[in-house]
Image (cartoon, rainbow over all chains, first blue to last red):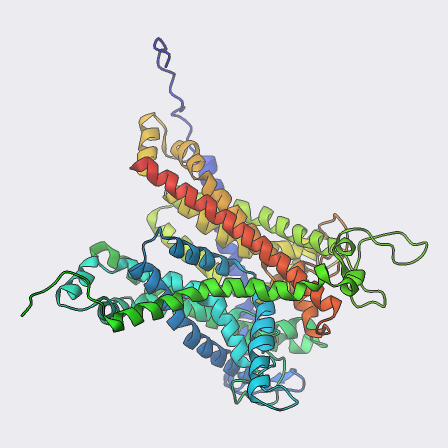
Length: 311
Length: 319
């Protein structure tokens, strides 16, 4: 270092107030809020008149020009229930394994983490292709050729079970991340107290850790449902149908679903002026479903986070 | 009688439980591998089968082709015409156009909001910003696509006097709305992770609050912000429903931002349902799927890599 330098003058001119960057960045925030508000208000105003009891409980009539969207609501709910049954156990156990059993720097853990991150980034349309190629084409047709001897496909066709399983893979990272966040908050003393009482690791996990992590698991499941209920690209080749005269009765039936219904009505309706209120109503139902679930998840999560203070 | 031994006893149940849990943890890993395998498997004929190559080889996808005597050679995507044409160039241009517009739209908003939230916002306002961003991220893409198709497209057309209602600009802006939360979240995390010691050092040198932010925090968090761009770009490339509904879906080679476009993702979504199983067209769609998978895989790895490095660097400094 040069020894005979005098101190540099202060790098920072003390007078600059920072008003410009502050107001520019505030403008970005306000613009985002404005965009969200415009979207929500537009859809609410366009749709709220359509939604009534008949709309929610009746099937579409006259080629979607009148009637309701009950089959689409039913299909969406059935699909996410199947999805949750598939994704929650796997997601929770993955998080438990990563957090309770392995060291964070082991190769295996790193590989799994990379896989989870990438799974979260795979485009939804690629999930759709995968669901078609793997679940429908490989598993489904495999079951058909092994157990059934019928000329028409029984399982090797687009069906609600395949759509749900495809979505389960898509939402797996959501459940894992939420559960892990909850596991991190559980104080170590709780686990140690359990060991001190003679419980084994497995017993501790089943009786102490998982029950303590329940809010986080719930958050993950809700966020997963919210995400899954709105996805269209992964299910358009794996089970969703535009119109069906009856509700799905088995796991290998096709089904109607809100998101796909919106897509087809918005892009392929021959008479937009007539279907517009129904279209807006359907979008509003879908949006309310996903947003309400999101709000619930945000609330639960903020309660978990506030526990950290004394954890 | 024999006292407690601190040696770990072998318990069959524990062993089985651990293996069962480990098996579940493998699902994500296996899924990623299977996704790649099953997408790539259907694209292989393009690389190996001469019959498929004659119609849809790599060179046919990339270079200009002359399909009729005396006509100009061109890039063209017309898989269902009598002479099927499988040039990926128009789709590539469409995909890049939409993604770039989305980034131009999302970067100022996402980074600006992240800076405000992490540096300037009073705590109570910060409590509002984050849920707003989460709600924005929670809007299903089909709903955004619907909004762009019905509302945004008309508004843009009337305001700017555009010829085509559905175009790259419309799709790109709607796409940008989904990218904002990605960029915001990553950038905000990176800025709040900058250690206090750095801020304090700058303050000691006479910097006021915003000077600390812009000369200290922002440069330190820059890699994290860049990671947000990379991840956001991957998101924009892969997003399907918005571009499918709002872009017009015309495969045109042009530089204009107000022409219709057709993207990789939308092409798969629009054509997969009607394609003949095992035909060259079918192989090409899976090939496009492989491309999408590869691009997003790389952007994810890249973004991840930057973030891990940044985390290590920041933690290393404070220690």
